[in-house]
Length: 430
Ligand code: PLP
Image: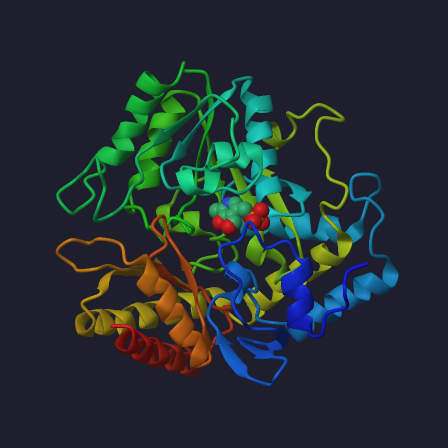
């Protein structure tokens, strides 16, 4: 037997397989409340990453805790796809009400990747077609099929071969689109989706999958007309639109769902992360005629739609509505973008600030002339923030984007302190 190690941190670092992750922050978390976390030594942090954009109502919101506890005392698991579970029906009904358009029937999973996998299968089942189109730099999960539709070589390495029949369309980057050029999106990138259908597929395309704002790509916000233009093309070819709201859903972007900014109704929509304030839950929702195209026995998830997670999700929706968290996200997001624009004026290492609601990215570059990504600086800024009591994320295709995605209950005061700390960290690492 291995030697007994001494501290919680030692045990974590020794026995948890961390070989696949790019770096665990040296914080041993003790507890959290709202938008704050404390480590085992009593140090307090403002949490501006929310466990990768998950803890939507903040850490251990009392209403979420109470709802989960109540369900736990009734029963924890019985098999959502074996019996009729009241709280699962309650959540599904709520989702039908808050999601766009005619989306109505949800299949529940335990994670975002599992939700995307299911959505891809459903698109195939409904259309009888086999191929997909996804976006360059897009991210949809770490399973084989979700990596197949992920447009990022680094995420895919050592994992292939992947599901065939996936073509990629150019990422609709507002200022640096390789199709539109000229520093401004002209929607030629949207029109290019038709070229992708015609030149890169056999025409047997089941669905186009995209995030409404690309999170892991570095908070890339497409042109406001992008999805409308793409949907017209897809409709002409009988191709479904799958919108992946795993990261953008549940108030993150200042609306309940990111696609609402674009006025487009998806055919299938995936969800996870913020849905249950940290309980593992995901799902995909579709119109009944699409949702019902699975054959009996074709799809299942043992833990999917766990009743405790569903109870937490119902409470999460209650809190989002009762505490006006979408509006808070929109208002504070606008405030933050303004404050970060001031920082950008003072720090030439900031190439671009972008986002919607409380989904904000600060792109760090060697210089604004070269726009060369400054990934190492991003890591140093994150460490300097941490030393001052602020947790932020780092991401982006080139790992040079600071990600600010706090719980939606964050206050202006906390966000203002976060911006001040970020300013200091940028000065220190200049
Ligand atoms: N889709 C998107 C847009 C995501 O951002 C993520 C995770 O970051 C996933 C899918 C995968 O979700 P999970 O990590 O819960 O499997």
